[in-house]
Image 1: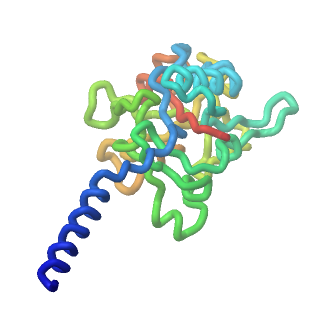
Image 2 (image 1 turned 30 degrees about the vertical axis):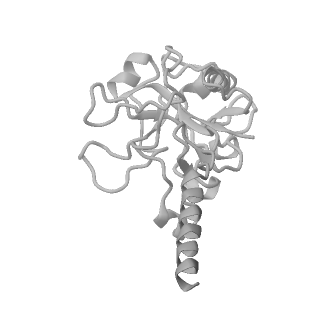
Length: 228
C-alpha cells in the first residue's frame, strides 16, 4: 500500500506540473503609451493640441488601438486669453503599457516622480521601453541619426511654462520663429553631462522648423498616452 500511495503521489504531482505548464499566460496589458513613429513633417507645427491628438489617434488606429482615446503629451502656454494646459493633466490616470506590454508608469505621480520615494524609484520610460506604436525601437545617442529629442513643451513635473519665453513654438502652430522644450527618451545627453537626464524636459530646441529640430537631435516626434 505504501508503494501504491507513493506512486499515486508521484502521478498526482506530475499531473499538477503538467497542468501548470499548460496554463495559459496572462494576457499582456493593452497598448497605452508610445512615441510617434513619424512626425507631421512641419517641425513643431502640429496643428496645435488638436492636431497632435489626431496624429496620436491615427497612429494608434493603424495598429488596432484606435478604440482608446489618445492624447499627446504636450503642455501649452497662456495665449490669447486661454490658460495654460499641463501635459500631465491630459493623459488619464494610467497605468500605461508599451507595445510589448511593459508598464512604463503606474500613474501620473509615478511618471513624474511626484514624491521623494517615487523620484528615487523612477519611472520605467527609457530607451529599452520607449517604443513606437508599432513596437519599434527609436534612435538615440549612439545611433544614426540621433533622434532622441521628444517634443513636450513641459517642465519636469509635466506642467506648462508660464514665463514670457516661448517653450512651445507658439503652442505647436509655428515652424518658424520660437523654440520648444524637449526631453530625451533615452535619458542621456551623449556623455556630455552625468545623471539621469529628463525624459520630458532637457533643453529647448534651436528653432521650430523641421531642419532646426533635426539639428538639435530630433525629428518632431512626441509622446502619446491613452487617456481613457
